[in-house]
Length: 116
Ligand SMILES: O=C(O)[C@H](O)[C@@H](O)[C@H](O)[C@H](O)COP(=O)(O)O
Image (cartoon, rainbow, N blue to C red; front, side, top):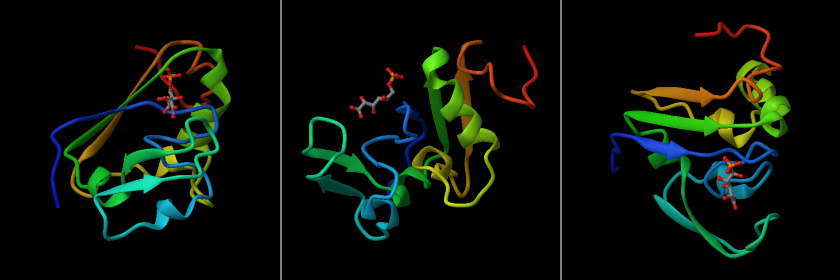
């Protein structure tokens, strides 16, 4: 399995990352490193994405999210618990780390955040 040093990821307001969307069967992919998706709920419908086996083999996954439009989903992903996790919350490198860069608007609904 390839091991990326750093993955720089975004997150959509529905909690998707890469082209891995909530509830999609590709969230359960265990074999392929890269997979096609032909029914993306967000245009374009046809995409190609890395899958969780390779994402979670990375040494470091970095998310960057900005703006008040991301505040609710950032709070859900980071503080929402483990029941039915959103795709962005499934980014948990087995032998690596996740780092989030947020502006104050995106972080505004976090209950446990400490300002730097
Ligand atoms: O799926 C797509 O079509 C988008 O490109 C998406 O993956 C994007 O990365 C996020 O929506 C975060 O984007 P922003 O950080 O720019 O809001």
